[in-house]
Image: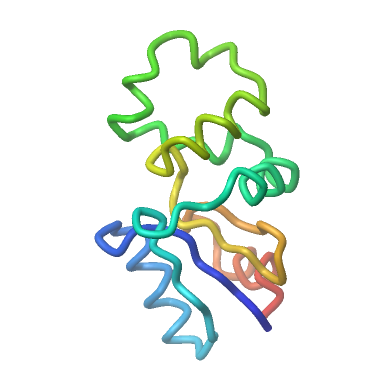
Length: 118
């Protein structure tokens, strides 16, 4: 199994997700998006899998700084914005065998298990 978690180390939701994975014996690779931002191509595939709407980190300063124009953006425009500023991405992003399968960590345990294939 090849689960990658994209996020930032000081994110509370990322910490919660990583602890859950450790507690359940799930192996993963954590990728710090501040140090290693995802490529535009990766983001495009994530948007294709999950859509741009759930990927938006609407609570961050980067999101608010975009202004009202963000409300009419296409998925392609969001992919470009995510690639230019990884802080616009909701965290964590779970990628299983190259495919984005889950964003955030609020789903019930059985949903998380199903989406991660564990």
